[in-house]
Amino acid sequence: MTLPDGRRCYFNHYWLRDNCPSSFDRTTRERVFDIFHLEQPPYPESAVLEDDALLIRWSGEDHVSRLPVDMLAAYADGTPRFDPSDLPRKPWYGDHYPDVARFSQPELMADRRLVARWIEALLVEGVAIITDMPDSDAGLTETANLIGQVRPTFFGDYFDVRTHIKPTNLAYTAKALELHTDTPAEDVAPGVQFLHCRANSVEGGGSLFADGMAVANDFREVDPEGFRLLSETEIPFYCEHDIYDMRSRQRVIELDKKGDVSGLTISQHMADIFDLPQYLLDDYYPAFCRFGKMLQDERYVMRFLLKAGECITFDNHRIVHGRAAYSATSGDRYLRGTYTDRAEMRSTYRAIVSEGRFRE
Ligand SMILES: [Fe+2]
Picture 1 (tube, rainbow, N blue to C red):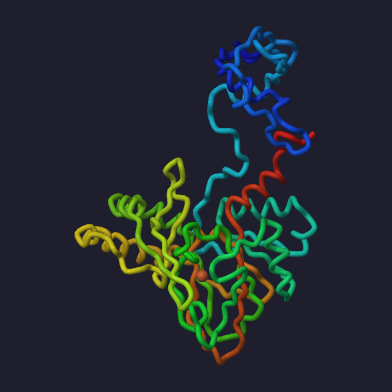
Picture 2 (cartoon, protein in one colour; picture 1 turned 30 degrees about the vertical axis):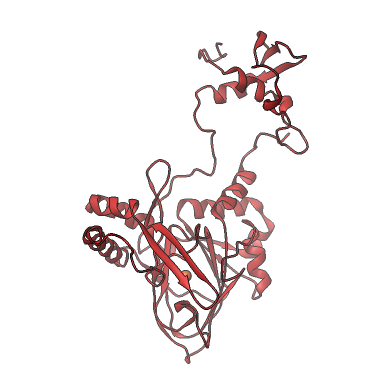
């Protein structure tokens, strides 16, 4: 057929029958037509353009489809549907702290459009700071719920970063914590991390954050072969204690469907013993170390002190985080954390900024 914009297009008969507007229930917004129940392959007895729609009378069925031309035009080329959350990622470097997107928590609670701006910052830069947080556990939950459901890990729904008497994790000590992404030992590590600072009066304990994507993009330029190894080879991660033995295999550099760097999975304290052929390690280890050194380069590392009442939010698959050692007896340091998922964040964003297919 020829669309009103002059394009000549071909449409498959099954596709036309399956996507008749009557296939979708207005209330549940789900597909209620089941193409598997058709007795014979769909065939148009007649097809005519009438006003803004293509009218199809189907052979062997008492059914007429009225397909809006706009809808046909959107799918004519067979390209993926437009996704408003598919925003270009912008790399940032060690001097980014003054420019980190900041949002006041009470204002976010009152304005969904502001939530969209916050998610935009997480999609584009991977990091944002929420200020004026309520000094309560509930304050973290209500903030996370603006993006999605709390996503538990095998540590539970929430975690407390302070010195523990019997620590099960380096984070729960006063020692320095190297730049890492969280819980790489899970099959799919949680997507968005929230670290709510409730107290920070110790000596030391400064936060370190870096944009893993910016580092990986530069690494691709200076060491293409190392980049290939780190983006193709799966290495083992673990987290083992008395009642759990979590293991996974991950690529250090994560690529999206277009082949662009979308993130990192890295953690020296959760990297398992590499069970890879020793000859492969002759190439892998030097590349891994070159990349790890680059990650710690001052050019990339943003250093600052997280203040009580702030909550730093970041893409746990892209932004690496760590902290300097601190003196546990010099004051209080308490961060409470949780996660939500990347996909749910994009879902919330689309629901706020786009019309979708069903809104009237
Ligand atoms: Fe962490």
